[in-house]
Length: 471
Image (tube, rainbow, N blue to C red; front, side, top):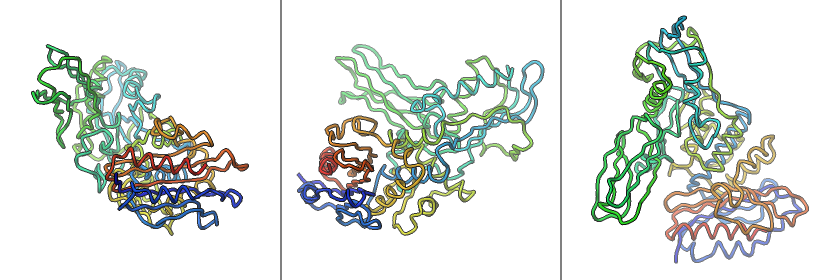
């Protein structure tokens, strides 16, 4: 069986006394028949510190998939610091009278927070309810003006260059917005039972998303999809089933701001707060928004950056990674552009001599390209910085996160790593610490495989074997 792969094993910052990795097994694995016809790039150790132990096409640039997140989270920790927080502001351009009536417009100012309403951040899961509770705490029982969401913090196209158009309907490729909620996605649950009509549940309530139900006499599976720019989810179910069938899918929404407004309005209604105005996005609001003239009702913070970074790397959270990348661009330049990610990252990571090129922060773009040597240098530099522990602890251990079913036989030492995968691409990067070494300094590694023609499970097997050969 043949697999076109690109393997990038990066193991960095080993002291001279540590530079004794047996590379004979690596040489065999790199030459494995599964890699016949594939591009392979491997680098172990850093040539700048004379710890380089193994190289193979180490300067070849390849698609890194979610290994891109290592660049993003490293840059975020370096520039913003582990305690950085996003803040979503609620403002009023009028007054609250003695009867609890808010006379004026409410403005919700987004600052790119990717955590609001997301269950991967437990304290944020009920953010919408917290917003309404805060209004009630202020004694507000009625809103007579409009609710305007300001989503202009990034002010760019919601998708980066190189994203696959057929990914955009799914949660992992949700649009990036200045005001995000619940990963800009809904959870669709479909239940089919013998002799009964299929039941459909879309969460959260009040999302504004609709569905159409179709049957297919030739299928025994449930298929859930959405056309681009449509608020209608198409659900195709078998014409009949002999046993119960349950299917769930996370589907992205076509307009993140309208989604936020719809759920916010629904939550207000359920709380008994009357709203008599309109729901408006910033693009529809024709009057200049002047926050310096308004009253701030309250501000809602995100978790600290070190917690966001852990979810990004541990669970491979695409939306959060892209928001972090664009936040760095905005913080550094005052404006926002996907095309500014590469120069900003190179500046923050002191990597101007490297040759990588990134078009997003998540790794969804097929246009991203990095070399084994590039990744080695970034990982090596992080070990020398003050935020290394936060960075290191954000990576999954075997049996956890995206490594849940991988490297669980690594009993000879410790591994922390970030995975990356997309069609025909599989990657792995992080640090290993051999238990046999007297010095417990983690050694960075990375494996990138592109153009894999065999099942990706075979590529992951090779990656795991390469890692285990290092102990």
